[in-house]
Amino acid sequence: MNYKMYDEMMEQPEALRKTFDSESSKMDIISKKVYKADKIYLIGCGSSISTCYTIRDAIRMCCDMNIEVFTGYEFYYNKKLTKNENSLAIFTSQSGETADTLTALKRANDYNIVTVSISNEDKSSMTKESMISIVTQSDTETAILGTKTYVTQLACLYQILFAGSDYEYKESLISQLHEIPDIIEQLLKSCEKPNKQLAEEFKDEEIFYCLGSGPNFGLSYKLAMTMLMEGAIKHACPLYSAEFRHGLIERAEKDVPIIFLNSGFESDKITQKAIEFSENLQLKVIVYNLEDLACVDKLLSPFIFIVPLEWFIYYLAHFNNEDPGATRHIGKVRY
Image (cartoon, rainbow, N blue to C red; front, side):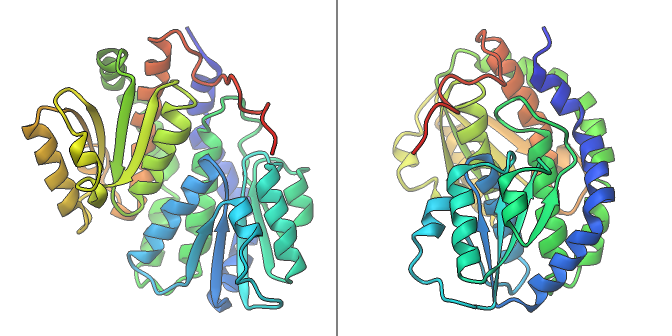
């Protein structure tokens, strides 16, 4: 048993190293523009919008930056855009061909907004349409849920936006960001067995709730939307940890599976309360703690959590006789 997703997971460290080597000078140019801009727009869909949510919430935890996230068509229909506004829009797409994101990019160009694309294909439409293009060096990715394209795209967003921010510890954070390839390399080895066992234990479950605080919400969104639903063909719902007590608390019943990403942020005090409540009600609780996996800046948590989650989804799909990289309907639906 060896699905294509396996190979692409293993290629993540090298894809990150190659992207840092290849794209650093262009990312520096964009960071300078970020620093001077009055507003930053982040636009993406699916796995790509999850990276936008993650970096937005990471930036908001420590920086004074006006930053907004939109899906492609939400940005396109945004009536508050103005001609020649002092803003910068970053468009994220693995393929560079996502129709709604590409449509939004063209609208931003019409408004003379500085446009940046981050994609994995150097000849993509988004690369051609944007004023500045970043091309992640992941080679072609086949598995639908996104592994190496996810981490490289997220790394570019962290590099660009933190370097262009007023965060007082940004040099240390960026230095640690460049150590992530080595850390992921180790995690790929150490996290497989325990998460394979976890997947076998949960293989018959049909719905999962996925919760995180701060930048971990973005990863919870990806976990639910593109990993569990698309990769493992399971129902899933993402939530901010603080929203546990609204809605979900009435469905938090014995034997319901719930996944928490816990980094020890100040806001994770609420995450801990939700974990304790869930354990008291005998939910099937899975907790990933940052301190159990790596010693890094908490803002970098999603780069750490993604590896055990990939193994969990990989084997969850396998134990249900599904290829974690295959799709049934994606690619066939056009709006």
